[in-house]
Length: 167
Image 1 (cartoon, rainbow, N blue to C red):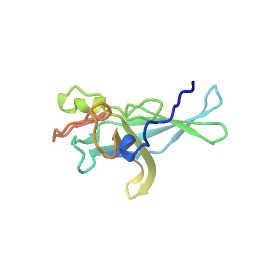
Image 2 (spheres, rainbow, N blue to C red):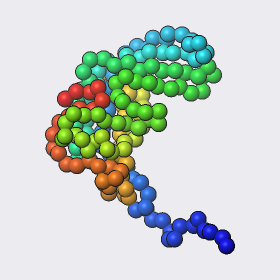
Image 3 (cartoon, one colour):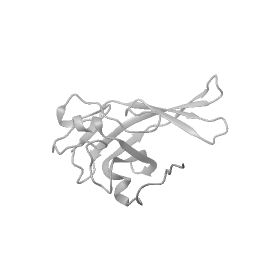
Image 4 (tube, helix red, strand yellow):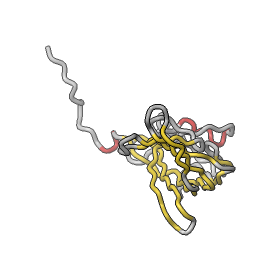
């Protein structure tokens, strides 16, 4: 007797996760300071996060409009061959997979704690100097259809905070 692992039907786009644009973050960074090689042979560079903003994308159901309070720091570890770098930031809470997470004491933003977010970043040089820009999306069930188990965000219409960013 053989068992089949083939699906009982062909999958559709609605069977796959989708992304809803959620947030836009811009951080102005200061001059990098090379600390030097660590005991494991990887160089460490410290980059100050000077100022920044974190806001909801138009149409996202949880409204956030926040500014960086104080300064943060990025710790950049480069592989000895220069092929990869790893970033650790004390500004935004995330895990080793790069997921964006939220922690709040406000019930208005509780739905953000249960949602799964992913993002992509890039460096931008403009009149302000060197900035890092992130586009962050919420993972949901199907093509842009929020699902309570994977998304969890509800409509609230207010301002807010995320990680070390303040209202």
